[in-house]
Length: 198
Image 1: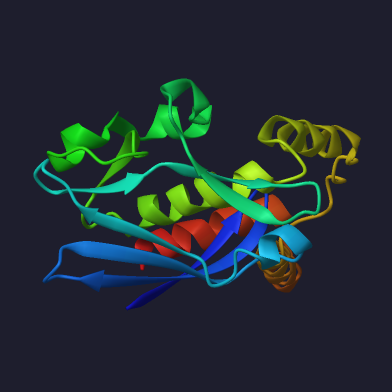
Image 2: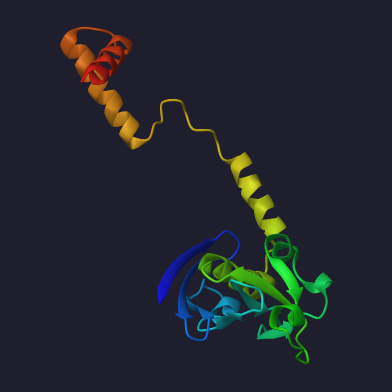
């Protein structure tokens, strides 16, 4: 059993638990803690199971997407066509027919994703993409645009603002310069040369 903290740029902060069953060759991803909001709260405790496929070293997940109804209650629907699969999943995961992954047919099961048996982070990502992104009130494109606008509106930092550690170094170098009655640039050069000789 392993726990993962995930910070998703679109939906927020998550805590996941991943359990592996070596005998049955399956992994289970469970959402232990979800971001705030009525929709995401319904995903708390939800699990996604990845099972052994016919393809060596790969686990499969039947692709089903979560949707919210008029009352904000969540429902899941298994996808029937490749076109229904979100672009983010199609671009980052291998997708094959259910029959190819399992060697058998099953009514209502059409497409699956494949993940390496030891790639738990990809399985968690699939949970977020299939269960959370589809019920987000903001699309990934809108979120990225908002982030870009915030960066544009944010005033540039004045030149004198430095990270804390850099400020502390600068203060010490100035003290060294005063003690040795030299300029700051000369003090920097002297300290660097001293460090290289030691």
